[in-house]
Image (tube, rainbow, N blue to C red):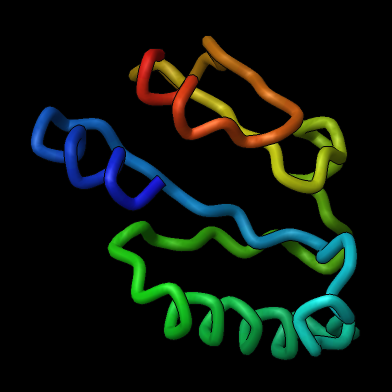
Length: 100
């Protein structure tokens, strides 16, 4: 994802990670956050760990973004400049995203 962002950001394409409820936080030694502050700490840690240039959007504790986008744990969306979804995947596929 990072390479795709570097290749396309100069063309005006914007990328965002959406931090939503974790499907299996215990797999990485985390616990499911109970407050928004705890969730924001996870976002900060993910940003530090990945060293990403891609900004993060943090979902609310009610997971409104996750529910609105279909509840998939690793989904991927491509939106046009007007904000319409033109590609939707229930599981992220960077190779296919590059083709899009």
